[in-house]
Image 1: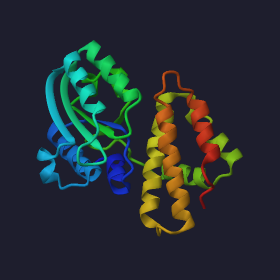
Image 2 (image 1 turned 60 degrees about the vertical axis):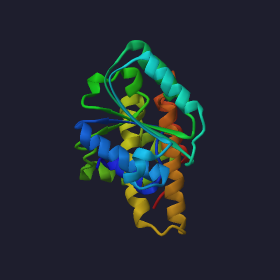
Image 3 (image 1 turned 135 degrees about the vertical axis):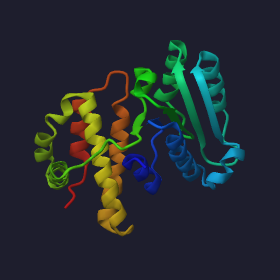
Length: 238
């Protein structure tokens, strides 16, 4: 499983939406595993769960987007959440814009897993609002990167601002920075005792990271302000 989605499954702290790219069947298995955790049920019972929707389309059109919006507007029936697993070969322009508006301000009770074999099949307006999950994993954290993130954790606020100077210059670079940092944080969380101060600081840091990453998908985000704010609010982690 991709390290980002694996970390979210293990911590139970999910994003509102994911784009799973690669082999459709593997993506479906990953999404169903996450859905079972979100809905607190066995994967084998998802097919009959009233708050789980699994639909595949050749082309996702405006009528299907409207139907999706109606389903989102109703409250969950037996769980605290709703999970939508959607597969589409292509999207009409109108449907993509409509769906993107749903993803801009998704209800707290809804999570989306969109499956596609190729990123190019999914309009940019949708890709920019979803956490991209690649089949083979796209976060190979080498020693140099890990050393950089450890230095970032231990630095004081002024030092962190210098470290993220280049990272904050572009939305895609900022997103990659936060995604990779989330992997490190999730690894650290799994190693700590839940009642320790270190665990609480790590968990706070993870929550802040996920909050700041959502800001990157606003209509006119400022990557520099978002990354610098995150660097200043993160506790100093020894």
